[in-house]
Image (tube, rainbow, N blue to C red; front, side, top):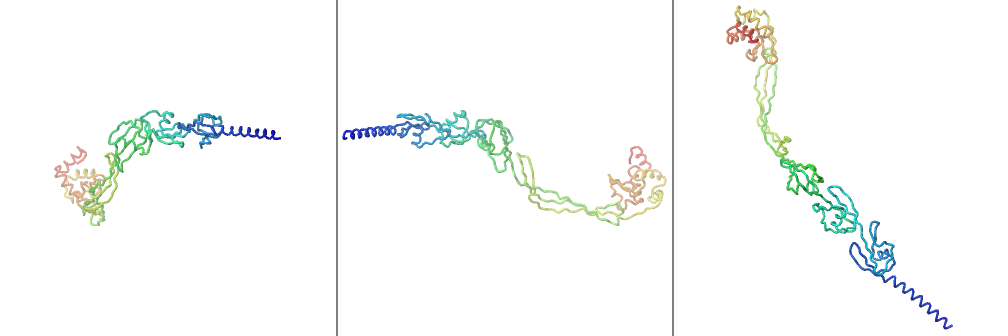
Length: 371
C-alpha cells in the first residue's frame, strides 16, 4: 500500500510539472512590435499575432495593415509590423480628393499620391506628421493667369490658391470700393482672368440752369390770333451736389445728393389776342384805304394773292409770318396784324424801300419765286 501511494504522488507531480511548463512557455514570449516604424519589444501571454496586439492595446480597423496576419502563431522573437492606414484629403486647385495611405508625414503621402512638384504650394508644412485620424490640406499647383489692373493686362505664374492670395502675392492693394472678378475667394485655374476695377466715389458741385415757364393769358384788346410778350422769361440757377461714381476713370453714374436754388427763374408772360374782327370791303377798297396808288393795284393784287390768298388772318405755321402781306416777324404789324389796312400799309412801305415799288417787287417774285 505504501509503495502504490508513492507512485501515485509521483504521477501527480509529473502532471503538475508538465502543466506549469506549458504555462511558462505561453507567458515567456518576447515579440518585436513595430508600429508605423516605431519599434518596441513586448512580453505577452498568447499564441497568435492578435493576442500580441490585444495585449498591447492595439485595435485595428479594416484598412490597417499587419504582418504577419492576425491569426498567425507567434514565438519568441517574432517580428510583428503594424501600419495604420489613414485618410489624407487634398484639395488641389479647388478639386477635393481623399486618399488612404500608410505614410506618416505629409511629404511621404505626397510621394504616394503623385504630387511631386516642389513648386506646389501647400497649406501645411511638408514635414507635418500624419496622425491616425489623417489630415486635410490644400495644394495649389503652378499656373499661368492674367490680371487686369490699373489699365493694363499682365501675365503671372503663381501657386496662389485663390484670387485674394494672388493679389496679395503681386502687391495689388484694394480699397473698399474696388471691384474684383471673380470674387476674392474664388479658386484659380490655369488661364484664369482676374479683373480689378478701380472705383472712386466723390461729390461734385455744379451750377445748373432752371428753365423758365411760359404762361399764356387771353387779352381781348388784341386781335384774335395775335400774341404779345408782356414779360420776358429769364432762366434761374441752382447749385446741385452730385455723388459721382467713376470706374477706371470713366464716369459710371451720378445721383443728386442735394440742391439749392440760388436765383429764381422769371416766367414768361404772353398775352393772346381774342378780339374778333370782321373786315368788309373789296380788295380795291382796302388798297385805296391803305394809300396804295391805283396804278399799283394789279401788281399788289397778284403779290398779296400769292402771299396770303387775301386772308387777313393768315399765319404761316412754320415761319410765323402773318397778315395779308405775311410780315416776318409778325410783330412788325403790331397787335392789329390781321387788320388788312394795317398789313397793306406796311406792305406798301416795304416794297418801296426794298424794291422801289409794287411793280419791281412783282418782277422779282416772278424771277425768284419770292420777294
